[in-house]
Amino acid sequence: MLVKEFGEKGQEILSTKQVVLIGGGGLGSNSANLLVRMGIGSITIIDNDVVDSTNLHRTSLFTEDDVGKSKAMVLQERLQAINSEVHVTGIKRVVIKDNIDALARNASVILDGTDSMQLRFLINDVAIKRDIPWVYAGVYETVGMVMGILPKKAPCLQCISQEIPAQNPEETPVLGSLPATIAAIQCNETIKLLLGKPLAGLIIYDVWKQCFETMDIKRNPDCQACGKAKWSFP
Amino acid sequence: MNITIRVFGRYKTVAGTEFVQLTIPEGNTLRNVVDAFVKKYPTVEKDKKFMMVSKNKTYTSFDTPISEGDEITISPPVVSGG
Image 1 (cartoon, each protein chain N blue to C red):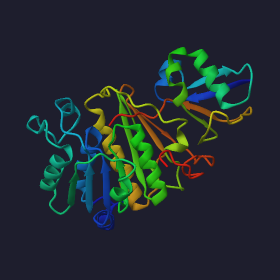
Image 2: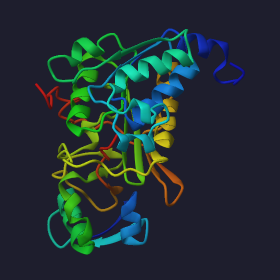
Image 3: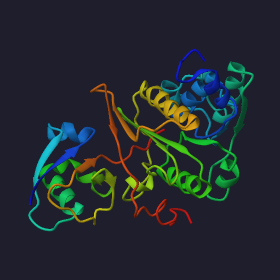
Image 4: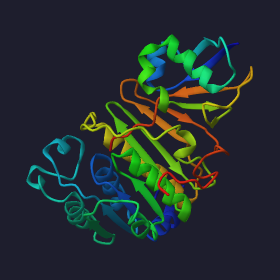
């Protein structure tokens, strides 16, 4: 609240907002942690996975004792203990075309914590159809990307993509410290979206160079999704 | 056509520079630019279908025509892990 450009008003606005977080792994758990500590109104975490020992290096809320437990339900318990004023809901469920609308329709913003490109394009579809802002974030090895997406006002994920990349069938290699970095940037873009501040465009972060590249981009008028309403998952 | 494109992310490491000069032997679309980039740096071939390519700050399809003086960028595909 002491931050001049945020202030009491910013805190009040934040406390009225509903976040739907899809994926509670490295990115999602770190983003949820930050938003709950900042006093978001409510957060719903949807993830069907259980905590695996290979997740522990890149998350901050899971412990060895959580291995085998539902990520969504462990996060619900931990996050609620962090800030009792935030309404936290964990849902252990696979997000698919048939349920994403019901899960996301009341969101002020959807946060991407998934590791699936197909699911990201499904989020993109529903966000545009429902006019819900969402914040893409992804990590791979030592590179991370974030893009806040304001449907029909800023470029969407389909605007910047030629094809949906195939899902890597193996575990994605990620430097342990990277998801926390990218989650923090994702939260910053989320706060800006919720407060109506301008977005940064596509942000690329490279660990080895310790540098950010921000790409100021425009909507693609021929975009299949936000331009022509031709959905990746009709 | 000779053009200079801007590359982002690890493509800067691959090229050793942010601004890459390319000779487009034939055609005048972004696909021809991507082909020339891949030919010059074959290690990026596996990304080819998924590269993000922009013309004048708008990401657009590989089939988009280009002209001399257009501001063209190529970025690696969006990353997928979470």
